[in-house]
Length: 398
Image (cartoon, rainbow, N blue to C red):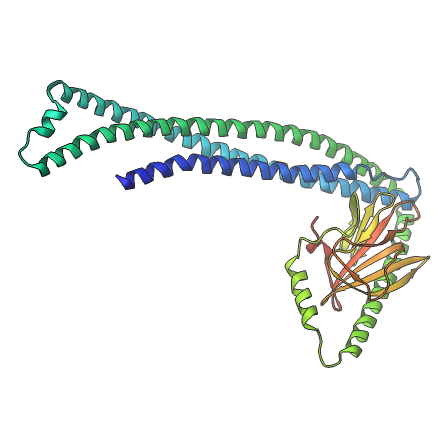
């Protein structure tokens, strides 16, 4: 009897667990999608230039391409969520069919038991049945039999009620899933329309730049030269910082504190905050990249170029110590922050209040980002482990 009661209790709990699971999945989907939609809404405030020179047009192309990339990520996520909800709908439909079958079986068993009990009652008096014995043990056994039979009828009735409740729960869940799918399809349709507009803008800019291919290649080559010079200076600054630290502690590579900090930094791979305040667009990815729409025009970026809004500031991606502040040229400033074995680099700053040796916390302001020639603040960010250059995209939460 106790075992049966435990089983019934578990059966009553299962609908609540499944309901919570379905609601939790939908809430998680909504939260993640809302974050992506909010990011895209903020990115819409990053405006393109109205200038028609090559530099501005390349910048505009980078902005549109970055927006399109983020839009595509949201579309991919939406499609994935719809497929997930389709699977959930199928699962719930199958469960409803099974529950309806079990519900009918429970009703049939209960009806049969009731008919048997009524038939017995017409010619059978439970009290007489219990008392018609000379042995107290037999009397007790007969009383227990009558009680258990009555209880089993009640348990059957309870099981039917539980099945009805579970069925209603599943039907409510499937309706919730269907409504969520309808909302997702609306979101998908809206973003597909926006993506088509951005693709059109991208194509227009690509065609304009193709007509200026010779000058474009010269412009890209000039930008690459500046980028290479900056990366060379960053490498030099890192080597100077490493030599300086080695001179201070010649007998040991790292202190226990640095080892602990390195481990903590590594455990946050993929979860570091973006090194810029406000809305942003990654307009320059790490590695060799084609200018959108032109396979023969390439750039090699050794970090990330992150464009922000007016007044955007660089911020530290993790706790650390400022190991170097250097001049890039044209009044631009670069800052190196050491996190144990790791070094984050923030370039294209117009000013910083930090000085060498300062301690910083995650999110602390590193400096103001300088506005480029076409009026946009772009942070150049690099990440190193000692002398080894890393892909920041692998470490940042994007």
